[in-house]
Length: 438
Ligand code: SF4
Image (cartoon, rainbow, N blue to C red):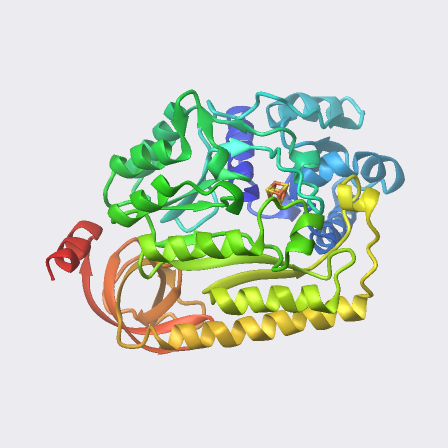
């Protein structure tokens, strides 16, 4: 989401006549787009801001700003106490950056962290200066109304609002014209996308018809209201990836209730079963929190057993860190000692690594269609890309290029990466057409 937001800010600044500096040392303005989801993310930002403050010693004209969720959360501390930044801009105020920069030029500190009920930046065409030129993110909605008890997002990003369908489709057409091959649609809870009669399924349907050679992914849906018609659409459209990120957070009913996640373990498992029945071979990933308020050993093992039962292909696993303003902060105690949180998290991670390794071993001998994202990090002689099921694959470079679709046969694996033998350059239409005939 922050990558997508930075691309919107790029667009606003370029429109205002600014240009992109080649590094921080040569910049007149440095804006740090921030995340508040965990304490660790915020610590990184503080450290980065301290580095930038030292640049001010050699460049007294330098303006440093904080954008995004952290800006909204700790605006006073950033400006008043720490004297680290000149400008603070919340996630709904990016259009105001040029005016705020002008205020700073007049010698004032500038802040706009007002949240909006309407802002979706629908009319701003993001300028993509980062990324690999093959895959891109498209924001379809902003904010969240779910109020999970641990989560600060509803407070930092405000109420949920959907971007008009036509503006999303226009952006995807533009990406198609620019040669992009993969689009990930983004929202805090994509299932609740709504533009008049249009639902998330209508949006996926229309988006996938724009160019059959563009793959689509999305993040994140909520388990409480995942639509069946979307599962059927994914099953029938070759360019809708057979990969779903479905955040569980925990595996016991008592914990889910404290987290204000309105589903039970049983309901979650039936959803997983339905996904696997409707989309055979679908790969699943999840988010897990270890050591949330009041977590007992039994609840911890409930999370472990859920993860084992589902057998996720990938999981994002973190120890709970308390966020101000949330329900958990106001009503519960962050009472699981740090050493126990750490131990539980490491048990969760090590179990997941074993599961991934086993799941990846079953891939050996199978064929996949891989979208090449670039050269492998380890060797220029190898290319790296992703399967439709979101697994990273590396294989010999030969004459393949970034953006090619390549059919590969998996020959070996680690817990994180598949090793493959490339077979041929192909297309989605050709590959799945052939697979259907076979
Ligand atoms: S669904 Fe829950 S966890 Fe996700 S952004 Fe909304 S409040 Fe946070």
